[in-house]
Amino acid sequence: MRGRTSLGGQQVGFTDTHLIPLVDQGLGNSAYLVDLSDGRALAVDASRDLRDLHAAAGRRGLSVAYAADTHLHADFVSGALQLAHDTGATVLASAAGHRAFDHRGLADGDEVDLGGLTLRALATPGHTDEHLSFLLLDGGRELGVFTGGSLIVDSAARTDLSGGDRTEPLARAQYRSLRRLTALPDAAAVWPTHGAGSFCSAPPGAERTSTIGAQKRTNPLLAASDEDTFVRELLASLGTYPAYFDRLSEVNRLGPAVLTAPPQLPGLDAGQVEALLDGGGHVVDVRPAVDYAAGHIPGALSIPLRDQFATWLGWLLPDTVPLALVTGPAQDLDEIVRQSYKIGYERLAGHLTGGMPAWSAAGHPVATTAFATADRAPAGTYIDVRQQAEYTAGHVPGALNLELGELAARAADAPTGAVVACGHGERAMTAASLLERAGRTDLTVLQGGPADYAAAHGHRLKHDTPRDKQ
Image (cartoon, rainbow, N blue to C red; front, side, top):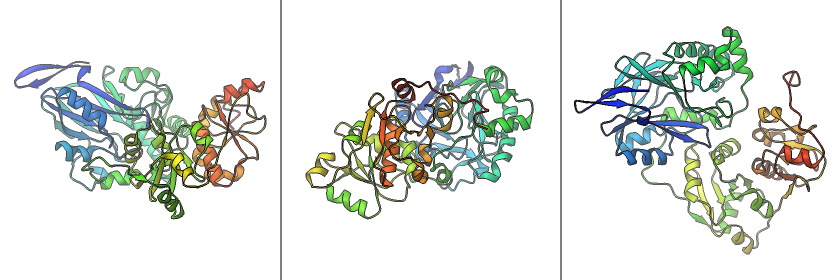
């Protein structure tokens, strides 16, 4: 991909090196930083966690002049308003989004002169009603398109985030939007926001970027024979999604709070943590699953600190009550704060100073959870807490699929003495902690996954077919 952009009267080639993808592995999204070759940059779909973006800009000596959002994000707090504060960036977004803060509202066909390059807004509703894609042009040449949650690699983003009555109409809009995008030249790059790991319907293992021509060859939704077939296939692919998705788009419309200093996670003593619990707050234990199993505060929710921490925090707990964190000695407190804040969880009361040893030393009770490898796990009912698509792809015969995100409401469905499992053990420990809060202490968490258990107990994994699911 090459084009020309101006710099002080000179012509400078625009190549792939001018585009810097910034991947959030935990949420499965990509933001983009575009070097405009004159000391300025364009940021597209940046989240509130701006560490990587600022670092990338700093390495090139760039200041972010424009912050474009393709849509009202449901899965992360937008960083556009923060960039406006930090660098004076102009926020570019759909006028139809009715954002309640200063921004340049764009409609279909509107163009922004970036100084040699042009950004053209294309109305591509479907993922949301007000969704825009941004076509990057050099003169009349289409270099690539930031497709947000419209055309994504080998799929299209989900259309059920605006309520059940809007799901099918938006799926039909998505069909028309994808047809519009695929009318672009085959060589034009496709730069989506949602990718593998996102709950906005990106398939697993997909590449993060593509081209229009490649998508016309490989995207199964583009092979749909007509609109009805497309809608049927898209809607059939929709799984569950985190609970916080239902509230975050409005946060982004109103405009999140601008941070004037890095938020901190103060220390709390055991008495303060106990008082927080008694007052209706929650304790989140972010230590590895094995440490939680060995001893934890009764009622604490296990969410190990890893790339997916924010997803499960936002899925399983409200954002309206204070949270106290239990950490291990080597864990990064700043990482906890950054992941929490990027999904709008700001009521972080602090962390237990001294960790579990301090809790025990203060004379408070400690609970444990059975955690066993496959060869030591009991034979019996097997609860698989993975997503339905993971379960369908391969599970222990006779396993009961209770997705982690729905488990709190279905605790009564968990059989007595069951083995609780996921792919490795982290989600299963989270599930066990939810069940313990519901009074269930008779369960064993599998340290491993279905293949380990099946091999240890003489089973073969079962793979569901479409007929099995009917």
